[in-house]
Image (tube, rainbow, N blue to C red; front, side):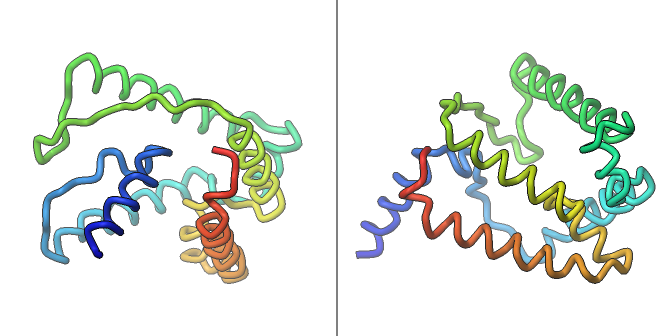
Length: 165
């Protein structure tokens, strides 16, 4: 019975290309410490660059400052160059696993989801990454935002089969 459940899960996951590059390697628990270190460094960079500032985010949504657009634009440029190099040079993961890119079909659910995401971002002043940095800097009210981000993820997972994909 478990094999059947695994196959159904695989089929469901493969439809929307979730975890297409999932590693099949097994590691010990302490292997993930490097991700904790990178996350801490990423959080420090967010704080120093004022990316987690509610005021900076409000400036962006009111078109009063270029700061956040510059950060986001820089990230897009780095991402485009990185994907180009991965494809062109056939770069593999640090464990020599192939990195695969799959086309994803555009649909109206992406527009609806983007609008919901943007509305939440504008209201709370946080997208998922900076929430942890904001909590770490002592903005404890962001625990409420984190809680509802988790609730929203759960609701999406619950209704996923009924949503437009």
